[in-house]
Length: 80
Image (cartoon, rainbow, N blue to C red; front, side, top):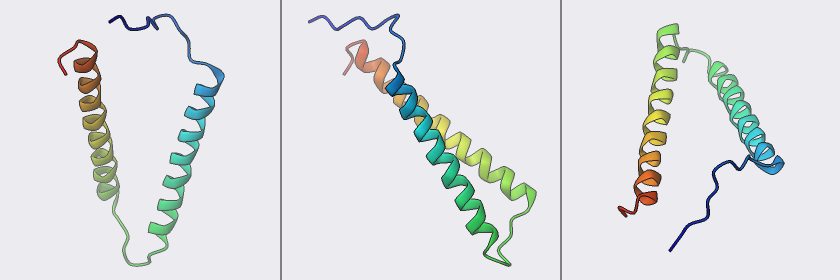
């Protein structure tokens, strides 16, 4: 069974709109989270805490993206 060849196909306008909407939602949620966190009063975080939080989020996203990429590569090569 042959699969369609999608090499050289550029993303359409709908794809870019969906990506922009997703980025806008993420930015909005981050701003909202920072606002709520700052409004808690005595539950402040130091600069080291913020750095650790950002590094943890980035590492978690990298791990999730890497594992999903392996799933797609494995599927495309017929190992699944």
